Image (cartoon, rainbow, N blue to C red):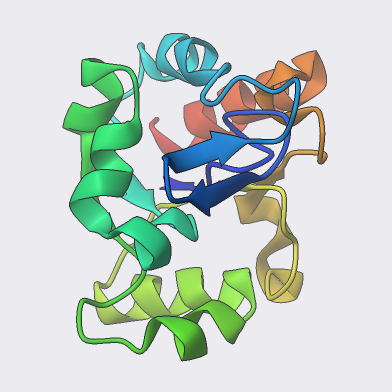
Length: 154
């Protein structure tokens, strides 16, 4: 599963400041991490980070920002190659970033959970799209994620 953070695991964007990563006013970072952990519990699914956090803070810090050890244990990689120019990589449509990873690593079964739909035009059935300012707090999105995970993990 390719996982974005902003507008997925919390209801807004996050920003890097001299004091660290902060959320938009009134938004708790990773407020839906427990929801994701619960939804993934019955499934054997790895997580590949597709969040811009990797470009900003690095893979380890992005992974370690997850408040749940169970989620952190599922994280196996990130879509951004370690040798990639982060500015150029971030300019690519999200779906292109994910599909490059899929091809490079010969991933057969996958889905992406993201608020961005750019670059997923040829594989919409693999995208569980969250709405900005709602994220995984949306019950319909949660049900879609469970359905798609069930189809992939049969």
